[in-house]
Image 1 (spheres, rainbow, N blue to C red):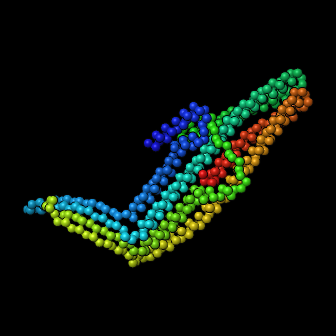
Image 2: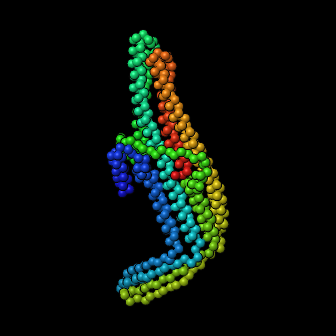
Image 3: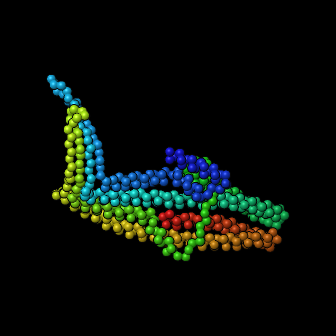
Amino acid sequence: MRQFLALTLIISLSQSAKAAGTFAFEEAEKAMLAANPQAAAAALDLETANSRVTAARAGFYPNFSAGASYSRLGSQGLPAGDAYSYGFSGSLPLYAPSVPAALRSAKAGAWSARAARDRITSTLRYQLKTAFAETINARETIRLSGETQKRRAENLELIRLKYQAGRENKAALLETQAVLKTAQWQHEKYKKNLRLLERKLNRLLGRPAQAPVPDLAVPQPPEPPEDFYTFAPRLESHNAVSAARARLAAADASVDSAQSAILPDAAAAGSYKWGGSDWPTAPNSWSLGASLNLPLFSGGRLSSDLASSRSALSSAQENMKDARDEVYLNAEDAFLSWREASAYMDVAKSSLDAAAARAWLVRKQYLAGQTSYFEWRNVEEQLISEQNQSLAAASGLIISHAAFIQALGE
C-alpha cells in the first residue's frame, strides 16, 4: 500500500511538473521522501518505537483476564464424568519500580528512532539539493558549450578568410580548427555528464532511470549573516545531539532498572471462579490478596548490573558533551564555507563582466588589424574560463548552503 501511494505521488508530481514546465525542489523532496526505502524504513522504525512506548505504559494499569476449561474424565469400569471451570482474575501493581524504568527506556528508544529518521531525512534532502544544483549546472554548461562552439566556428571562418587573403598564417588556421574540434569533444563530454546526473537524480527520486527530467528549479540561497551565533540555538535540536540525548536517557533508564531489581515490588491480585461437574450448578470460589517480593541474595549479579549501568551512564554523559562540540564545530565550518562561497560568487561575477568586456574590445581590435591573433585567442580562452567558473561558483554556492542546512540538522 505504501509503495502504491508513493508511486501515485511520483506520477502526479511528474505530470504536474511536466505541465508547468518546471520541477520544483519542494515537489521533488516530497516525492523522494515518499519513495525512498531508507526514509520509509526510518518511519516504520519510529512507528515501532512508539508502539513500544504504549506497551510499556500499560504496565501502570490493572490487568484483567478470563479463563475457562473443560475436560471429560473416565476410568475402566466406571461411567465417564465432566469437569469444568471458568472465572475471572485480575492484578494491580502496587509498587513496581521496574515499570517506570521500562517506560523511560521505551521513550528513549522512540527518541533515538526519531533522531535516526531526522538524520536520514536531512541527508536525503542534502543529496537531492546537490543533485538539483549539479544537474542545473550541467545544463547551463551545455548551453554555454553550444554558444562556444558557434563562436569557435565563426572564428574559424574568420581566420580562414584572413588566411586566404594572406593576412594570417597557417598555424593560426590549424590551431583554430583544433580548438573547434576540442570544443565539439567537450560538448559531447558535457552531454554524457548531464545524462549521468539525470540518472542519479531519477534514482534518488525513485523514478525509472530513463525517465525524462524536466526543467529544474532550486531555491536560491539567501545572503549569509555576519554572525554564526544566531544559529547556535538551533543546534540543540540537531539529530546527532538528539541521538546522544536519547542514549543518555536510555543509560539513565538502565540505572533505574538496575536499582529497581534490588528494591521490593508489591502487587494485588484477585480471582472469582466456578468449577465442578454439573452444569450450570457449580460451587464458586474467590480469592483476594497481595504479594511482596524482596531479593535477598543474587551472588553479586544485581550489584554488578548496577555498577555497569552507572558506568554506561557516565560514558553517555561524556558522549553527549562530545556530540554537542562536534555538531557546533561542523556547523561553524559549514557556515564559513557558505560565506566564502557567497563572496567568491561576487568575485566570479565581476571577473566574468571584465572578461566579457575585454573579449569584445580585443575582438574589435583584431578585426581592425590592431592586435595579434594570439592576444585575441588568449582573451577568448579567458572569457570561456570565466564563464565556466561563474557557473561553478553558482552551483557551489547552492551546495555550500545545502551543506550548512544539513550541518544544522535540518
